[in-house]
Each structure stands twice: as structure tokens, then as C-alpha cells.
Length: 331
Image (cartoon, rainbow, N blue to C red; front, side, top):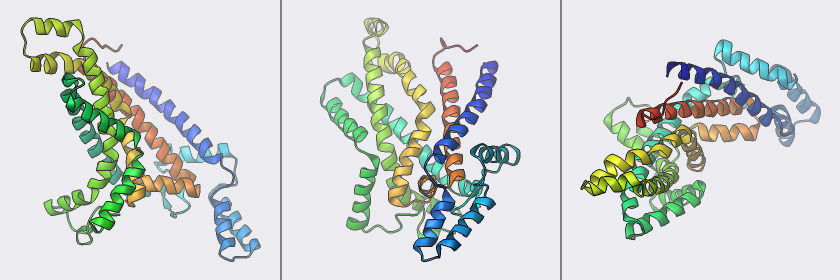
């Protein structure tokens, strides 16, 4: 097992390099760069063309945008590996690592809470409806799961935003705390206030995960309940609840566990849509703005981080599968 983990980590390192290369190239594909966007901004503000051209040239020289693509990538990767620096944000005029450090804890908080809720609720509902195949509750939750799987999360966010702001007149939607708790020390009251503000984002990002986990767990459990060993367990006189929870559910969890390897970036994607609509200060709006502004070091660093999360999640999912099913062995 240890050799397997080490081998996977080595492979993950080279895969991250590949992800970085692809991400950097894709980000640079659109015509122009931040300097050209800044030049156009100056011209729109009435700056003479010559002064705008000179300002754009200075920016390109200052941030190495005038160098070849390979050189820019080498400078970026070298800074990450040797100094732990992810580059400099042109738009925010700050170190990218500092921007990520400011927003990453909030993003992970939302993503982890969404992940836990969607997994527990979705799997629980799947276990509940599978033995009631084609009954009222099975049809009811299947229809809701279909709706929430199909509906875009930004549509749910817009509807919820309208209800909260226009109908319920709820203040401070675009923040994690009320004004009186922004600089206050951590306490139970501050945690409660934070939950009052972030529950819309959790609901928006988590609904799709609940629906998917429900459908996957229901389908897997139905397949397992038709297996011969389940029929044998029933023939021995075991209670139906014991047959389901002890024999069927553990074998139906394999797909759910394997899915956990990609679920955190998926939840962060849901958080991105919710945060953009609600205006929350997380990595979602930061990533979107960096793409619009062609702020390549922010975009590349966030894509690299998402790739690392997928690789780490897949490794953990494989290890959990080995714990769940003793038949799985890694050499």
C-alpha cells in the first residue's frame, strides 16, 4: 500500500505539471492580454493613444508579458516550486498567493459543508427510497432529483436572491457576516451569524449534489437488492433492515465512494455560481474576474489548485475503497 501511495504521488506531481502547461496555454489562447485590455480602458477614459500605448508597453515589460509563452510559464512554475509564489495579479496589484489565502478558507468552508450535506442527505434518501421502488416516496424524490439535477444552479441562485432581497428584505446577502460581526472575535454568536448568511450558497451548491447522490445510491442499491446473496440472506430469516444495512448498502457504496474523488471541485464549481450571483468574497468571483481580465497568474493558479484537489481526492477515494471492500488490493 505504501509503495502504491508513493507511486501515485509521483505520478500526481507530473500530472500537475501537465495540468499547469495546458491551463497556461488555454488561458493565453484568447487574443490580447491584460496590457491590451488596460490600454483600451485608458483610451475609453479619454487618454491619448500614444500615452495608452506607452502604458501598455511598460506593463508588458514589468510583468514579462513581452516574453515568449515558454519563458512566462517557466518563470511562473519556477516561482511556485522555489519560492512558493504564484505570481502577481495585474488587476488587484497583489501577490496571487495572498489573494488565494484570503479567499480559500471561505471557499473550502462552503464546499466542505455542501459536500457533507449532499453526501449524507443524498445517500440517506437513496437508501430510503430504493426499497420502496415505484412507490409514492420513490416517485416523489425521483422527480425532485431530476428537477434539481437539470436546473442550472445560477437559475436557483437568481430565484433565491430575488426571494431574499425583494420578498424577505434580508440584508448583508453579499457577505459572510453582519456589519457588527465582521471584526468581532470568534464566538457562538458569530458562528450563528455566519450560518445565517451562508445558508443560501450552501443550499444552491448542495442541491445538485443531493440529487446526484440520491439517484446513484438508489440505482446501485436496487441492483444489489436483486443479487443472489441478498436473496440468500432473506431466505435465512434476517430482518429486511438488517439485509439492507448490513449486506446491501456496503456493496452499493462503491460508486459513491469513487465519486468522492471529484466531488470537492464539483462543489467548488457550484460555489462559484452561487458566489457570483450572491456576490460572496470567495474564489468563485475571483476566478471569473481573472478570466475576464486575462489575469493569467490567478487563473492558472486556481486551475492548478483544482487539478490538485481532483488528484488528491481520487487517491483518497481509492484508499477508502480498499477499506470498504477487502477484496480490493493495491500492489
